[in-house]
Image (cartoon, rainbow, N blue to C red; front, side):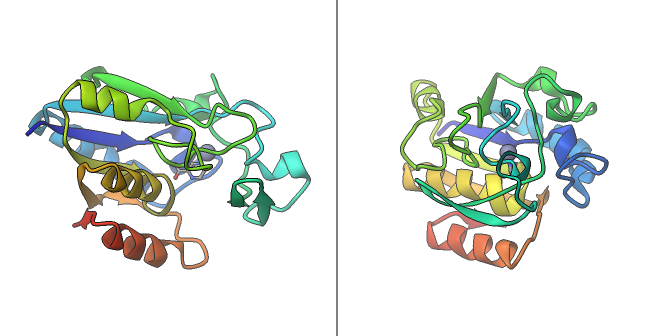
Length: 197
Ligand code: VGL
Ligand code: ZN
């Protein structure tokens, strides 16, 4: 058994002061650093959108947090966030990035959002993470990071469907909790066979 820590989107824009701030987002940084040494591998994800991304409300002249129909299904429209190369897209300054074996970026396709570290929101286009984990013999994952109800949730459900043993440490996550999204996410993760602790 080889067990990796998957640290989801601990980036400035998801922390207080950022463009899509998650309440308490910075509070999880030191505790995440503290558990890194307990794992066989540490993998970080980075939300990484081009300017004018299709998940941005401004791109559609719509209100942030409104929902539109995309070819792949409903899509929440977010404030502009995690634009490639900006300070908002950078990891939180205290995150121990040096401890990472692998950093995987997602959301770079202008036409499709990518909450999950495994597949874009069409649930089909792979990011390549599955191949990386498989070739390293990693079969067990613990997920932490931001946000519980979006990128952590989608990543955990995909990982479970792919056959990984998956635990989400909710004490090391923080949620956006928009319109019942947190309750629905925890429910969906448990149904998919994720250990939510
Ligand atoms: C996320 C909304 C948009 C996340 C990323 O990291 O949970 N949420 N992009
Ligand atoms: Zn995003």
